[in-house]
Image (cartoon, rainbow, N blue to C red; front, top):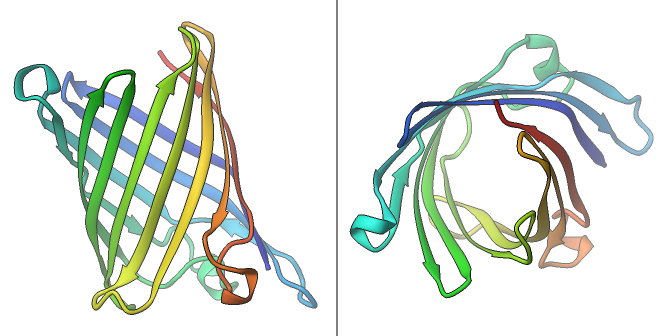
Length: 196
């Protein structure tokens, strides 16, 4: 099967220097072999990121980013585009710059209403090739509560500033495992970031 999310409306607003509000909702399309293509509105996700330590003062930045995701329309659930119920996502993030590379790690837990709870984890690195171009690499995964059933993927990406208020974001990646595992053979993302 092939799943598309686009457009994704992702709105972030800085409430304070160390606090950011997020609102996100995608349009989803699912194309399965031998089945009629389905599309509809994805889950609504909202969260509040709070950076409680700054690297300049503490040697590393640390933040928590609680988010809640819930169904927007029941038709998307009936079509198999989204899972039923509410998810509470509870990640913690640590960021540190070592030399010219900025490292980010994340570890968290997802409490799911109708499905098994999950662990989230990942590590990412970013390097500025120039004042307007950053390249990134990421490994991230999810696992069940006992870490028996997991999915691990990698991504390579870039952020290219076009102007002071606009940037292009792109990435491509896949699962570490073979296609027979049922995990993603290709993950690709393209976005436009507008800062106001």
